[in-house]
Amino acid sequence: MADELTNSPVETSTGTITPAPGTGGLGTQVQGQAATVSTAANATGDIGPGHFIESDIDREIYEFNSDDTPLMQLMLRSKRVSVTSPEVEHYALDEPRCQAVTTAKVGDGTDENVVLKLNKADRGLFQPYTTILVKGVDGYDAKGKNKTPGQELMLFVTGFTDVDKEPIVMAVNGKKANETDAIGTVPEIPAGTTLVGLANALYETQKDVAPNIIVPSPNMIYCQKRGFSSVVSDYLEAQRKHIPFGKALIAQMQIKKFKCDGNRTLWASRASKFTVSTKLGDQFIYTTEGVRWQIRRHLDKVGKWTYEEFIALAKMIFTGDDVPKSVIILCGKNFVENIQTIDFSKHPEVQISVKTNKIGWEVTAIHTIFGDLEFKLEPCLDRLGWSNSAAVINYSNGLVHYVYSAEHKSSEDIEGEEAKRESTVVWDALGLKGNAHIWIDGEGNCSVEGQTTFELWGDPKAPTNPTEGKVYVLLVDCPGIDAGAVTGQSWQYKDAKWSEYVGEIKVN
Image (cartoon, rainbow, N blue to C red; front, side):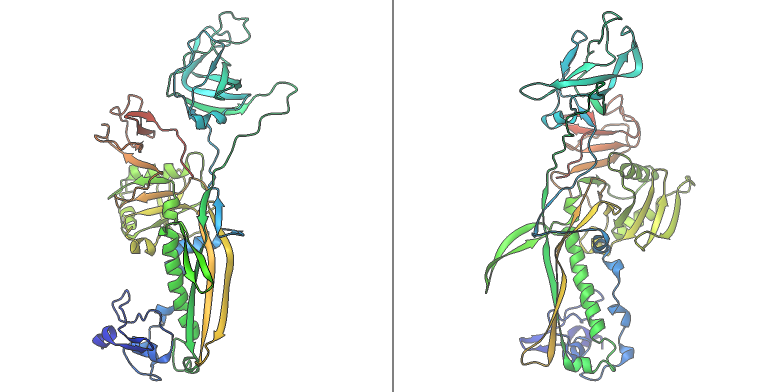
């Protein structure tokens, strides 16, 4: 019987086809063939038309299971946006930034107004009447005479320069030559100083202020048209009392394959637009961009996890400018194993439980002081070769389902045949919003150009060959990087030098 299962030929109108093996190794996969009694019988061992026996069929392999396609399930439950074109301008907006870093030294204690030197993209962050906290630079007391260690300098934006539109600032708590002076002078602000924007401060009768400078930049996302057809003979339908997989169960299996193919597409497809020749002329085909390539934060982590690394991951997820309400971590099988084998015995405050989450999935939940992490196995990652990796998905408000054409079905009789063809077509795309999503790369070879890459660093010594642009999340104090590099900070190696990382996460 085993030989028949793997080698039974199928006679079709186009010749003889040997069924390909499925994932279990059995020759039951007759790609592109109609679901008739003869093809189904041959594909399952050549039992012969009309001679199916119920005990020979495993009903469960035809059962539809949404757990096989979790990313698609997330898309279907996310915010739905109907669009009027398959080409969608997608705005992956994150929380507004509040920090910038000076690019050159300004101020020497003699001028009441100075021009802040910032990257061109940062100059619009600080509008007139905005107050700014200068990290690491001490301010002065109310008399403007003595420094106040630990109480930092605050600036007030008075305007912009005419040509380069750089912020002009004065010191709120600067040094004064005389106690009666209205304002003080601006002390030295070194290059590389972090500036944190605070609220604006308006004069007594003021009500008009400049609007917030938020000019979003869109990504182009293509909606991909996907479909499948089912051909079922009238004779097969007539045998449904004897055949346990009638039309409904066959449709379930076809839908399952359709959804699994679509789920892999949502992960790994690359965006493209090209034309094909048809009987109606040239027409466009669109392929969508997988979320693997949309995620802008990458964490390089190969091999086993330690408790300290796990807590650093929780901190990355639940702190910062774009904190999610709920996340699901969809994992490859090896990643799940690595997380399950972390030694939590010395940390009773970390609670591990199995629960049903808001989506209705049974997940492994780990409670930390930063927030709850939910882990779920994602079989598609194994199929795609990413068994050691995982994706942190903000499913509470970080997904959008673009629909160009709602799912629709059609049914028709095939001319000259006693059979029916049923077709299903969908035309949609999944877009990510915000920067709370994280791709955890456990393969060691999945870097993506233009995305911010992180690495957990647990050595007091600096990396021997640091990667240009990579951000190192410190698990221990690291004087090898900088005397001020302490546990919990992030430091970036860029332009052959180290600096504390406070930059933005690219979202387009």
